[in-house]
Image (cartoon, rainbow, N blue to C red; front, side, top):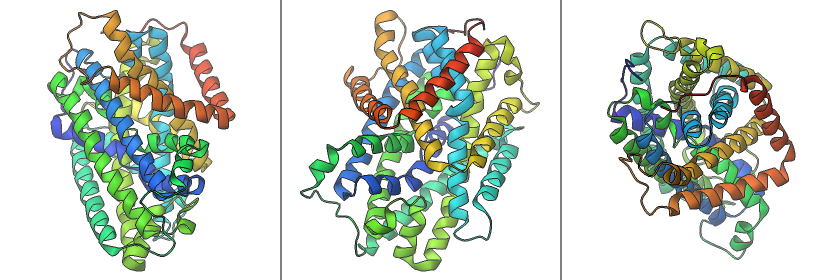
Length: 433
């Protein structure tokens, strides 16, 4: 947009992708997966498939971001590719669930980990984290960007140190075998495996983060595709190392149904003190995750406010360039999710809803090529159309399984979408710039 300050360079954009991805899901969902799919090789395959899906999605979003360089993510892409109504609905989901629910999940996970080393209630810790990060980002964009890069470097360093130490420690009694066994194929072909892919997809969500802030990135047509792809590859490698470490250093009985899997793993590998240190480190890592979503999410709300008069208040900036009102709205909704203290329900709902709109967006790469073949595309998806097609098949499968097994999740998603349609159907068409 004309006159917008472009304060995000390559390092900040990559940090944004990495920090959005590494957070709640990888530190909390393995226990839910192990409870339903008690096979080590099948669990690792889940994370390999999740990384492959994320990379296919990142490549697809990279082409869209380079061809349509405006902030807003799905809101902007779907408006241009399909119809402004689709964009408005995606924007509505972004406002209500897309960023506020992941912020809440990260905060709730932080509260669980903090409770292992501090005498403080998990909800209190979660609320404090949300308020702290809001204060950092709500008024000064430069402060928020610097905080994000620093926090992400600390996050990656902690994970590498933990993985090296944990893998050198060796396996504990009762841990799952990481090599395929007789039951691996049955586990892979089971419905719980497909359902667990939703959890893994949520853990990888964030691979599209740089697409939300295109309007504030320097040289966006070059930087955003690189940031999306490079950030996704780095996180995939870290996730495989991290989950291999968890599976080797915790027994199935300790993992199954446990949210704070990192604390259990570290306590086994490094003793009680090590578990406390890692819980502290994970808490700091989750602060970085919350920060990344506060950096990205309000930029979507800001673009929506620029296009829809009724939401114009979301486009207002502070004197230091921050979309203060958008930040406060997103974080207020996040606090509402936090006080429900229903981690798995929020996780399933957010994972299903976000997967559905990401699926529509990735399929939009194919539609846009047919709709606007002459549109300049500085970045093209390699091996097209294989990456978007593979993303569509695997994501579509997990969405169908959730719809079949968790119908209330679908009802909630449809109800939320209908409410958004009812509120926005008389709004002017969104920009297709």
